[in-house]
Image 1 (cartoon, one colour):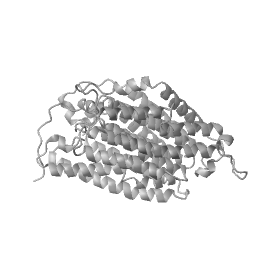
Image 2: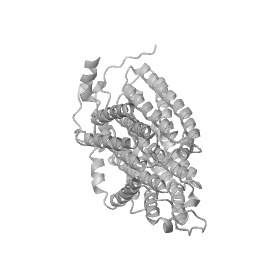
Image 3: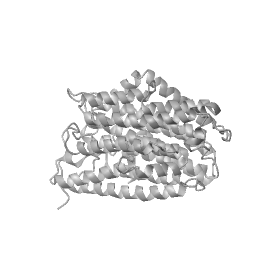
Image 4: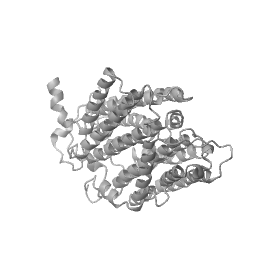
Length: 503
């Protein structure tokens, strides 16, 4: 048993090994002597080491496929490296944001849960096997449950944790049932749509795919499975809300793209039609949910749902621009959303929109940074979100996804209204009775400054990121790069023989 595990270690990506070893070190430190606030420094060092391990592991230059890849648990390819890099950088930013809010008697436990959630997200992003995917997903979900209820004195923290517990458990059960049906039909544990294996019973394979998608859409909070997100983000501490809206969404979208990597999504047949319906519902429903919200966390929850719809448009736009636009938009969304939550963390005692009146006069730096993030989410130049949306529009036009692009434009107009309304409120003179905004922690200030600069600079000079995201996917015929290209690194072109397990 031990020899088998040691032999399997070379196939495990470096970030997974580093994070797992670091979590064990922190557990030992907690068992021997509670490190308290020092655990934040240890957690930061572990995340930094995992990021360095990712950079020097050679994952950015994919190796050619070989037959042994069929049995691998992880797809250590460029698509995984890109997603894991975004996850680790976002987790590091959230750690900097939470330096003050998670300080206290149980700071070490909070940092341990943050590392466990990061490990689960990295495993989800790199899973090529259904078992590895589900284990990573549950690691992520259970750590989030503890983080949501970390501060039980918050009025809505326990309620948010209970809602997340019930819905996360239900969605996990649905997803696991779908994975079990797929295995029973195909005899294959690879994390991919079972219809790609030419099953003997296509109807059963279709049912398995629908169950898996239902569970994934619950986790992604894509419409119509999105109503839990606003309540959970509103009740959770701000750094935890940022973790849910950024880190978990990155991991799950990377996994969703890998799940469909061997499926043709260019036409209007199933499952492309179902994905298109979910994309439209998410874009329109998310923006309508955020429209008129009086709490900024709930507003950002609706925004997050809408941006999942935009990413699904990129996923459905197979062609020379589709894969690159999805990867580029993922980075733009992560920077802007994390920056928006960092701005909320800079004024933790003012969660309501009305409390931000006059913020340009009281805290001009925070107000300016939040305006930059909202401009990026709305797609207003020169922020990077403008180029990201234009990139998706170009990809959709090349793939002839006109109905999806019409929904994207209409929903973006709706979003423009509530994003600009936040800026209008911050420019409005504050009443004389307004409480002064407290000072932000140094970590939050540094993070907010870095993200604001990155959002503007990437919008002005998107070329390097475009080249990086395009290089993730090698040519796949005359159509150019597609998300399936990264999947070819793990799977050979000829599938192995299938054995149907259901009788």
